[in-house]
Amino acid sequence: MSDQETAIAPAPPHVDDLTVPWKATSPEAASIDEVRKRHGDTFTADDGGDQYLFLLSPAGVRSVYGLAGHEATQDLADHGLLFRRLPDDVLSGRRTVVTDLLSTESVEALLPALDQAVTAELDDLSDIEIVDVFEMARRLGHRFAITCWCGIDAARGPAFEQMVDDLDLLDGSDAFLPQEDRSERDDDLRVAAALDRIETMVAAALEGDEEPTDFLARVAARWNDVEGATRTREIAHDIVLLHITMTSNLASAIGWTIASITLDPAAAEAARRGDPVAIDESIGGAVRLGQRSIMMRTALRPVVVYDGVETFEVKPGVVVATMLPVAGSASDADDLGADDRSDSALFGAQSFPVRGHWTPAIALVVRRIFSTFEVRSEHPSVPDAAPHHFGDIARPTTGWTAEFRLI
Image (tube, rainbow, N blue to C red):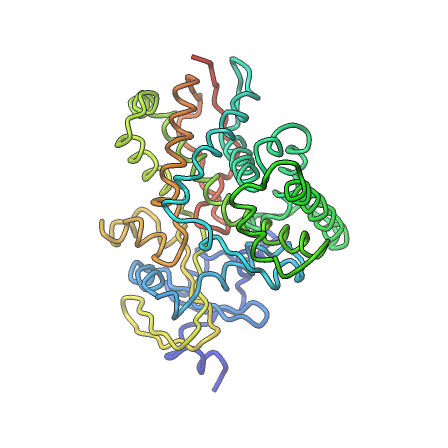
């Protein structure tokens, strides 16, 4: 009996020629949707020592998101890709995760820091400027998080620009996107240099004349039993993982929201007025535009999943996955039904959702931008979401520009 048959029963079709998307670096690599056409909605694939069970039918989507956190964890499955560029010493021994710091209430408490970050971002614009909306959203995400960790002064000027480059390098959420050709040694050297600069920034915030921000102080308190440079380094490594986790989905959600509102005059006018109901509806619709990525859960104990036809018993260690570019297509969305397209169904109860916790933050950005600038774009529609992207909210396939004209 094969390992596949013992790990998943009954054994679904196994795909030997599939290169999992985050390793697909050549145009010849088989894509998920190609494999789906050949083998159906349920199949397995291997990547090194990991075995993946893909469930791409509407019932499969529901089953993946129905798994409780104590049964199958998103963290183990996600971190291998989201943090794939980080060395092992950064990943091991972490003492703070996002859910230790953030809730709906704590996000509300962060809105003043976000407001400072938005002011700094908008101050960099001229009265009339062509802006890549998603690029701006990405920078704003970095600026916001750095303000939370180290204060607004660290989120301005040349030092901030260097931090943007460093944090983009460390963020593995584009794990599906083709990477430029670089040697492994070059990557290691660039990552090491980026981590050194981030450690220097954190040290300055800890040792400066002003009190550390609340967020930084809470992270630092978990390392009070460690002294000197080792303590600073471990705090900085916690910050790196927290930063990537905080900003990747939030920045993408902000970009999709600004783009979709820009193309809808009524929504833009409502945003300018600060209409909370209309803004919330715009955020919900925009977030769904970007749901084009893989969602994975690593089984911690034996679990049972159902694809609409067959029930499968899955042993610990198997990664159960669905992929919304195919499972979330228009035809499948109709099959899912209204309840299953809700935020809790699509994001999953154990995920850290953009909607809910982050809605007040996205709404603040929307109000500030559309009350300050008239935003217009010559694009007839929002861009396509990147099909080979890791994270709940995908980045766009191309740049998307708009004219920002000061009101």
